[in-house]
Image (cartoon, rainbow, N blue to C red):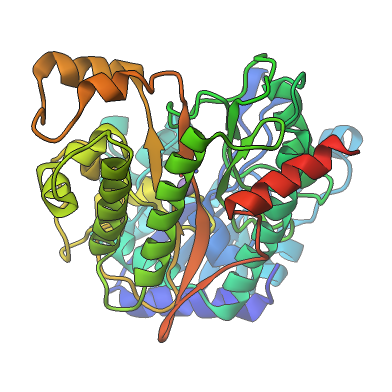
Length: 465
Ligand code: GLY
Ligand code: MN
């Protein structure tokens, strides 16, 4: 956890950015898996954690923007809590860690919001993404659950603050990338004929858990790489399979995320066909990283990657025509089906719960309605301190191919006979986490094998163990 001054300063900046009112931030509560005492692993709300650093359930804060003072609402642990779960910090201790001036019991939050409302002061809240939060906010605001109105000014102020990472935050993200490097090296070592995807996924996640970390999202470990978020199955790996591993973790002390993708040739050698696609994606990723700099719209960085993908696929005989024309028409999206990446921080898709368009487009860019590019989560200009993933891919998705062929979509650009010969190939995606600096960018964390020969060597070294 950072120093208490870090959180006091963040709250003071938030209060400065808003007119008079009461900001109410709810921390998350425990969530039951199947019955009340069997719980999902606790995940704190990222904005609550950003402004308090606190990672305990059942807390809330109210920040008075007029005085700049904050109250932490929480309850003392009961004897039962202490018998079953052990000692936990008191609200007073937590408040001191977060630099918070006042402490009150949970029920006092309703009084504070009622008093603000009675005196005509706005109560600013963020959009709820869990039903329980929505119900609590509805109670506090005195409205029906469906009528909870998040505060646009609060949302924009939080986005402006959280998007720009300090050096300390970047250090935490880099710690999460270091652990992710170990996760992906482990997956490369494990990519041997006879292992199941489950075994690789388990070993990859064990690397995170062994550092006191945990996955930042459900790990994607699959030979079905053409399905963007396919998780592991019992598939037994065979020589020549391509195993895509897209996984990250959180920094153990602070919860900042990483998100990395690599692709391993099972058994340790890419085929020529696999190399052709892999090199296309690698060229696109390196060009996109190179183009990432302050003032450049991430939408344009996406287009750089798209044109490299189109160029590579023309070379492989899957597309025909000029890459710029292919991308303008959107034909490349038959193979590059998603956006280039997203902001990353305390959330792995940073602040997506506050509204993807508000975070990624605001009034600076317009989301495309073209298949593929419309999934780009972030289009606006990059600024120093932003941390972005850069993750192009090429996929051979049978369902998409079947539909586009039936519609004869972009038939001038796509060689459908050739494309059908690639069904079953899977997919290739390469992802790194990139800091935008004052004069360009820096790829965060240690180098994780990515050149084909380096990935092959890492897989081969696993076979020797
Ligand atoms: N790495 C998975 C995703 O960004 O959706
Ligand atoms: Mn990602």
